[in-house]
Image (tube, rainbow, N blue to C red):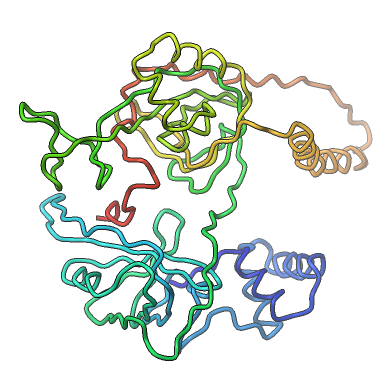
Length: 389
């Protein structure tokens, strides 16, 4: 099923029609009211687009990367190869094969392209910087991100005549949606929380392959990577912190880049404290009580049966005025609804008894061993498509 996100629908309508945000919001609201809650906001936006004569999905012929939508089949698009990853062999649940991927970009956006099994041979026909034209790909949603997948019918034309990619769009991350910790669900994508650091666990440093960033095994002869053999390892690192926002608490897992953002230290500075427990304790103490923003995805830690957030962005320089404004804006609709209820006439002879409702806040989750989630690879290093196996 083709599924276009709500913000993309709105942007497409505004691109083709001269319509204000207020008018568009009102049209969508009217459609939802007409159908008495039988349709989602996205569905109402689809109907409004159709009423206005806006064609949301392009069918047939080449499409720019911005117009690629999950669910599309036989996609034709072109872009410049900005990153090409190694082909990986896997053996999971009795299934063996190969998977490889690369990133292409044009003036409108960028997207990952994934090839499986025999199709991985296509990755040997081009290099980073080449322009490629893709034919007969299909589009899937992977952890909230669109991906083009290649099958037996797919083709890649390298540096095709007549196609000139004048520039490439800068990488962008989808806007995160803010949630209270108590409202987090398993497998939330691009979610953001704002909370106070109430516990910091010891960072863990581990040896990894400098080529594929996978953890290496130490043997008598030295460190060995399953894919690249004997290697001189680099170090990866991870830290866990517990955040509390007044509604609940949650453990946040921060790998290399996110750990740097958390401690405001670069790679060299963090490596210098690796063998110094005193310096690590100082970093942890300075962080306690800090209010930070963490964005990422949630996952269920099966070992400890708890929800965690795997960070892809950490912000320590929080703007108090911006947060206060956000709280006021969120509180305004609830306050208006309360006033509306108070203004409703009471039946004759009835009385009101004020009752104070006390909600007990769940006790913070107990911090177990630091051996949690550290076995995951950093989000920026993993080939996410492999997770679909």
